[in-house]
Image (tube, rainbow, N blue to C red):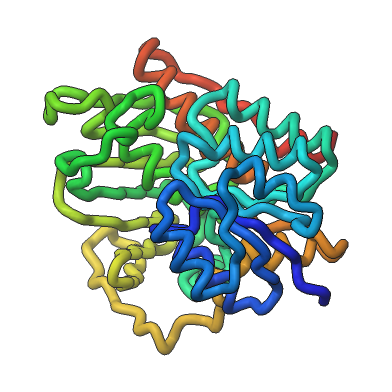
Length: 342
């Protein structure tokens, strides 16, 4: 496959991680970049051969660039993506996709109108842990999936981070920053979210505008109920628990530990059994699936995975959660994936 000739905005920080993943695929030719930090641009030029541009506008103006990778903060994703589409460039944008519904509609409208291939920075659901879940479901070890619990927590709410403390730029606080990963996981694995009820607490850290703790109840379109807990002022802790009528899977993350617990017919406690990583089904390296499938789609093979509509659905659920907190009502989540069929 002919390499994709890319320009990149935001090459330091997480942009460095994204460059590593792009490099691993061998599918990209790094043409030019721009970053507000000259040191980051210089490092990217030395590592990947980018030519450093003076502005994002100058980057978009280059006729030898066919696609743009946007690895900046969430507050600028929509503006950069819209400009890329208007310049006729395919684009790949990190998560969370954008900060509000106006940005979301404008971004999707611009990409669809231009007919460009839109890539999304969420991880694809094809890693070993997800393959393990699918294997347990296929073997009927879980029975009927009844409920799912997800928790994402760290103490970043006490750190210096100006944009993350502005409510309009970081809706839901930790729900927006890290809970979005859980939403992007649960939907392709178990089904789209239909409606949410959410509760947010703002009074723990008086120095921020954003939510310190959020508890969100999700009802999927297939009836499965979920809770998503997102805490921004507590110790580091991440897990996903899957409850079925025949057994439960307990997935702890960073580091990964997975346990299975069979339901006792008498309702008595059963021991959890640890599943060793060497026993996981072989999964793909999901860290490169998103950029690889985007590149292949640009060349006319397949579709990006995850899609931009997967990213839209994840942030739409967060926007609905904020509305639920504000109004005290259960809020329906728009089906953004339906746009791809329109």
